[in-house]
Image (tube, rainbow, N blue to C red):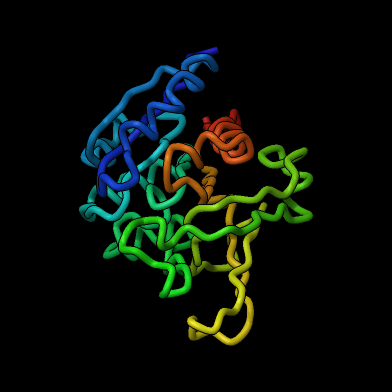
Length: 236
């Protein structure tokens, strides 16, 4: 069996610590037999030969920009069977100006509601809220989330705009608060998969900081998601 090839693409907004965050998962990939290549930009997406040989792309690239040929190359690789995964803003708050990228991923960060205004002090903690990630019925049967119980976090709670072609493995609900303009609780997908051509996509929205990535539930989901998304025999 040929060695599986993983491509880690990182960069963008430094607030999500793309280098340190991805370094957490490199040992896992290597232990599981992947040959790992790390790139600090999305230029490689436009290299059709390299992407054709890539079995898994792990992206941590918050905001930033992507060219038309780069997003086309990424999309073509996924359609042909390359897996695509990531967490938090590194995958669902990437390349806001690219509708083609948003269509590929199936969901886009809209906001992360904050604390009551009188409790804000101007730091990132202003947006850290206690919330629960709830595994769906589908998630309880899916290999990525099977056996994982609902878990609580105190971090950014992503509000995601999405289509209905995603398979939702976990959700989180934004409650109504007097300082917010919405009038009823809003439930957003927190973990989802997406089948795109012969490829598999996995999105995990928790992951703002290293401590969240090291949370047992979050880390397990991300690591299982890498394996599940990897090019399958049928897509070879």
